Length: 553
Ligand code: F6P
Image 1 (tube, protein in one colour):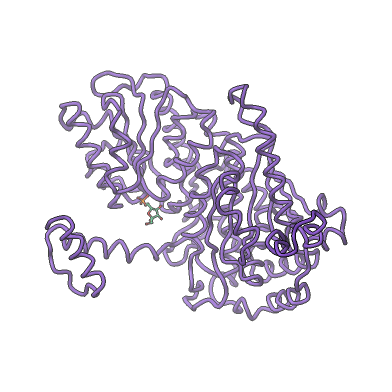
Image 2 (cartoon, helix red, strand yellow):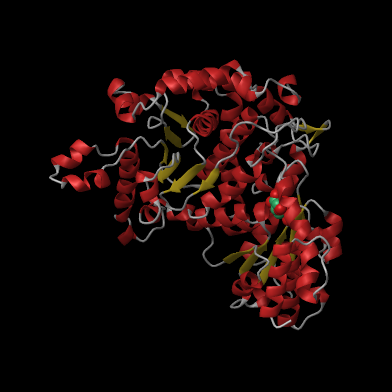
């Protein structure tokens, strides 16, 4: 690893490049996007990049050539490429857990060589992919049958966080590529309602449960998996033997899988160098592979790999994840932007932002640097958003006329999905008209003069004025394919990486989720048995007492 990122380095806010950006921001002042476009009429085509199938327009950002040059100098000073290369080489850049960070190996081609502790991990990756492909094939063809001999028609993935969000999101995204005869559901919440709604109309004899958990110790997943096993055995009036045909595991922990009662022959493994939120393209993607088939899954992995290679090799000026990462750093530090909206104009991407929330916020929701010192700069933003047109009729008001700076990504596609009912195809232009209109309105707004020229009464002019100047990125692709999905996810993975590298934080641990888990374990006996929980604060004690009384305990 480069020395700079391995340990102490100049504090980010003391770097001359950071200070220069601050001065530049002052000079930029209230410069409006209208002025930037007037000064540079070709900006709409000049400020664009292409990676794979993704066309990216960043012209509607509050940046000039000088801003971009200064941001790239900051990236160089922070040695983003040094840390990037260390990641791709398999070095242990997740320092607080002493782990390599090698999700990029999960989509490497069969002949690649990537070593961790001197061992090439690529053959193991492909062994698992081959095993997944063979198993998916058997489910899809009907060769794999349940305990009673019935064909499997229902797949229920039980997992949470990185063991749920990826496959659940991707199943929605690629619905038009799925075998529509299969019912695929995702259970994550320890609220029994989640499993109840997932299985209540299913025939247990036709149902396969995929228990997805990197650690195989996550309480929500193990609790739901145990309940699912009880449901299955009760429904089938069978004993433990039935489990083998109806349960498979995706995990790094063979001992815990065996302890749960799943034959490790039916386990699909991965490795500690795959972080949970980076694991969707590992064995954790099995439910998706069953739904779309191994070939489509490979196309998706190739899409990931294409962007990995771009990130690894493209020069700074045309490196898309680098650019997106730098823009986020710019707004967080110098515009006090607290959040970042991701607004897909595709119904199939309805869970995409929720997936990105874990990717980004679990990675960069940190407040100490790699040396353990408190940071004095903004780190990860609040990531939020839902499909665009629905958002337009809900929260876009605040983006347009509120007081907050909210950089936003707009993601859209030229073609509707291939199997859309012919009668619905015409709606696509209307969808995309909204897509283009919104970024225009956000950027350029409507001046008081323009409002007056429409004859609006003077007292209403301030209310009908749109300040504009709201920064957006537009990402446009021809169609939403498995490869494009892989490209999009890898783009955001590396964007998050770039930001963590600049902020000098460990983007690959997640210690912040631990305290709540420990406390939940301590509080549970207080709820069920009324046990005294030592150290419980006054508010929580009163709430526990209220809960118990409401439940008649
Ligand atoms: O609690 C957070 C977390 O550890 C995530 O990072 C992870 O994706 C999720 O829990 C699920 O963990 P597992 O796959 O080990 O069940």
